[in-house]
Image (cartoon, rainbow, N blue to C red; front, side, top):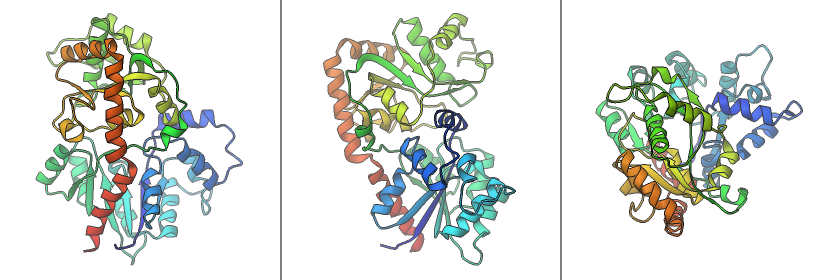
Length: 373
């Protein structure tokens, strides 16, 4: 196996950073390394999980959260007059990677991406990226700068390859150590939906429709998340507007968005986790599928082509074909908690066996080895 140094350049949600620093006010006395440790232990999104596994495999691997201003300004060579992009370039020069992984292609302009590529000249390194959302003209122009691009389902791989991109399948994953950090307790025989709703074309208008259907059919649920955009801008597939009273009910019952360990703690309190993929793409496989099953919460998710490839849809997860089907299956799960628990535990066994960050690190390493052949 070829040894190499991998550096991931990642971003964190502004909403998460605001919440994190509101809860961790005493950070001024912390060093870069100390604050970094507090951040990754909070287990937000992918944290540094894959890098821990790569390091166990003998690969020197690390991550930089380039938009985390409170963290970046503490880096050892940072000066007060530096921009955060200048700090990032210095961090790349300091680590001298063989491969740079960009986790959000959209974060950097083409000019900035080229500056990253050239910052170690004459040393050259490979550039790879992860992209799991709409493929538009801006992305297509950036994609030409990368040696490999990873995405989360086969539908996106096929679509990218049709454009001539070097696309590879790299699914989301679950970190088993989280289970030891979440307090076990009696679960509620209720439904939760944890996630944001972005109103707009090819985004999450369908999630508003989903919640409205639950309200109309009097299926109780708890929604933890934010709503971005205005309901006034939202139109249903048939061109009609959502009823005002249903929208008011969604907003009235909405609970505060949760992140990191708090996210998993909340999910661990429910028997059922509802999932609905964004309107873009066809293959599904979003993060919530692995988070819910990994936590041992019964996943109730929309029908996607790859569901049956990932899980036994008769034993490990529950799949609905329409909103009416969703309501019927939600009722059955609520009325049959014993069977719901059996499905949840079966899904958890599958995820802990096949969809951990250890599995993901091994898959990523296989792809990266191809860069040296």
